[in-house]
Each structure stands twice: as C-alpha cells, then as structure tokens.
View (cartoon, rainbow, N blue to C red):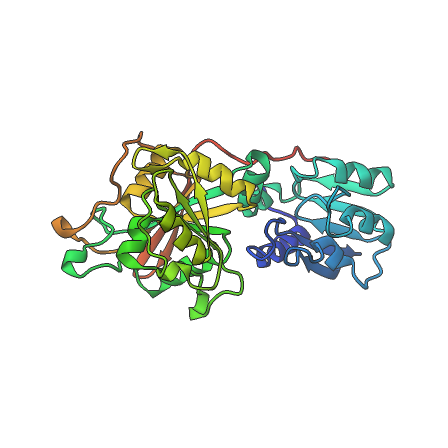
Length: 368
C-alpha cells in the first residue's frame, strides 16, 4: 500500500475524526495548503452541516492554494441539503485539488466540473488508505447493502461462555472499551431474540462509560414474536427495528410498536427471517454499517448466507471445556480464511480482525 503524501495523511486523520458522526454522508477530511504551509483543516460535520471542503475554505484566502481531499468533492443534485463543494472550490480560487478517492455517488462529475473551471486536479494520492477508512460507505454506495461486521468473544477452545459455570463475560476492560468505541461509529447493532431474552442487553454505545451522543439503531431478529416490550433494548436512546415473520402475533406487534419499535415483516427462512431481505431493507433506510453481536445461531446463519464483510474476534485466554457453549450452531457453511488480518493486543485479550468474501472497493488509477 503506497503511503499518502504528508498533507493527504493529515486530511485522512481529519476524516477519521469524523467517522460515525456524518451518516449517511461519508466522513471526509480536507486540508488547504499554500507554499507548503497548512492554512486550514476541515472534516465533515454531522448530516445537514458543512462538508469537509467547505469547512477548510471557510474564512480563508484560498486563492492559488492546493486543497487535499480524501473523497471527490460533491456536485449539485436534486434534494441536496448543502451547497456543492465543487462550486465552493471554484469560487474560492483554489488552483489545484488533490483527491484520494472518487465518490461512487458523484461518479467523476466533481473532477470534470473542477477541470472545466480551470482547476488542476490530481487523483489517487492516498487512495488505498481512504478506501480502507470508507469501506462501509463505499460498500453501501456501490451495492445498496450495509457493510456487515461479525463481532464475537471466544475462549481458546472456541466457546462463547459457560453460564452453567457462572461465566458470561469473557473479555476484560480494554476489549469491552474497544467494543463500545466501534458501536459509537456504526449505524446499527444486530442481535437475535435469544440474546435479548438471555441477557436483556441495552445495545447502546458507551465509550468511556458515558452514552455516546449518537446511538446506533438496534436491530432485533424475532421471527416468532418472543421479545417482551419491557426489554431494555426498547429504552430511550436510539431507534429500534424488529424483524419478524408473518407468523408472529398481531397483538405482540402492536405492543412492540407501542414500545417505540419499527416492525419489519420479512419472508420466513429456516430458523428465522430472510436475512438478505433484511439487509436490503436496512440499506434502503440509509444504514451503511451493521455490527452483528448475535449468539451462535444468528452468527452461523449470517456466515452461511454470506452476509459478513468483516470479522472482529476477541480471543480470551480462557479454556471453558465441556461447560462452554460453542461459537457457532445451526446452518453449515464452507470453511474460509480472513484476508488482510490485523492482530490487536487488548490485554489480557487479543482482537483479530480481517475481511471475508470477495467484495473490495474499486480504486482509481492515479491521474494528473
């Protein structure tokens, strides 16, 4: 992976600082430079606010400067809520724009618009790093489907807990903090009804122990209508979607709706609901990223259906033995290996991350 230039690296850092606060807009960074000195840095504001380029250009003399952007500047389109960044760049008198990655939503029109106005444009600086940072957005824009992460904690002998032996938490404080940091940037968390009935989780993001300002949507799989309306998952603090099948009782649906949830009726599937249909429905609701925190049956179904884009496996230095519950249960699937594996120590645990499947974001050919 070719390293970004120093100014593009600074723009990528700005983009990373906005991750999780801009959806459904992408998190973007921009750096304005003249004669080798940084004049301003911008990052995308929460949805409806200024984009990164506009932030970097605000109140600054940008004539003859160079603007580094992690994603292609936007153009006018019907229903747009903010002024087009390509117009702002042209009006500010920027001489050159360096873009890491083309935006599938813009489709190269931003580059064309800038060049037609006499602005020099280069594409490709830091493209791989920008694509890595924007994988959920790019997946959603290119396919209409949310980027899906399977997250689980497992012992050294492949067990997810041993309730009969009083062991339900496997990981330590550092790993749990990392989980809440990830919850704070994704759009949704998905679990099955079994997890809600067994653990009654809140499914909120609490990095540093405090509720995050922006909470993920909580998605519950409940084909049979078992989750009670007084479960903690329905407490205020974020939207709730319950995916069910035609066989669930109308009275139960009415109680769940009264508790504040949106009920989605999906086609039934072996052991639950049609997960592909659910994934499409979530994408249509501008949900770009989902962390699956379900139990053994939900995880197995998601792997068998090919829904998983990335795995976050927290490995605990425990051996649970016969009392432990197996990681996966239910539908069989073909063995596979993770790609681009990263290992992150979170003492006493270890996080193993990697990609699954064949999807990869398309990268532009470098151009001047």
